Image (cartoon, rainbow, N blue to C red; front, side, top):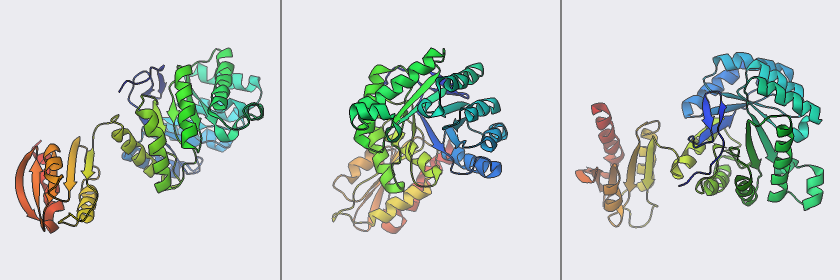
Length: 353
């Protein structure tokens, strides 16, 4: 895959764009001013593999809390600002690593200038966030609806405003709840702008439907080399956003490490309880850092071939299964013990390494 060429920015010490690995972001759902709760959630996100975390800053108390959070958190902090430019200035002073604004709802150009000046003085990038649900009224009148071209024109307008204040340390996002609209807008943006793109399907939905929407939309863009950082927006625990984001990057071939589990769909040929076996293997290998492929296959049609091609695998028969390691058979195991035997085989190799 050839990645789209974009400029590089830094969020804390994390590079975005310019060929850097695609990063995974999430957003805390705690009250930012509740520092202990926010720090606890940030730590859970970090342990799940999150690279960057965004915090809501709806008031001065939240903005002023960023200093303590920044000092103690193990992740770069993005301050999410709307409506009040003074919150962005305070967040920058408190040590935020990036400011997310929509220049269209911050106020007059002079207020945008004040934010740009505060960020430039501290080398803090700004994410220009364009959302189909909050486009300017004149653009809605011009295009008749939130269209991809309307979103790109909104982005262009905001970028030109920041550029006029000698600010160019920019990340860009164009999001909609519609997958086709998000994909089209980002395809247009990738052709026009040199800035790194933050991808996401906004208001994607619950843990299941939101994951499906995000996988389709983000996957379509990532597999064309578009996108430098992502957030999977779910109506769920933010940790689930991180897990989903990492899974999407792995599926797109953009992140290594951790177990890649492949398993066949259950059908009438299965001689073992495939669903239970696959779920057991997945649960027992959760958190395993090794970059390996593990195959859990249910019958003798495709099973032996797939299991043989994986680093480790099993292929089910009638009440029994065959274990594979690096292409060779290492044992025949009763079906009720297959999951445990496969995981023990992997862990034995872990202990040797």
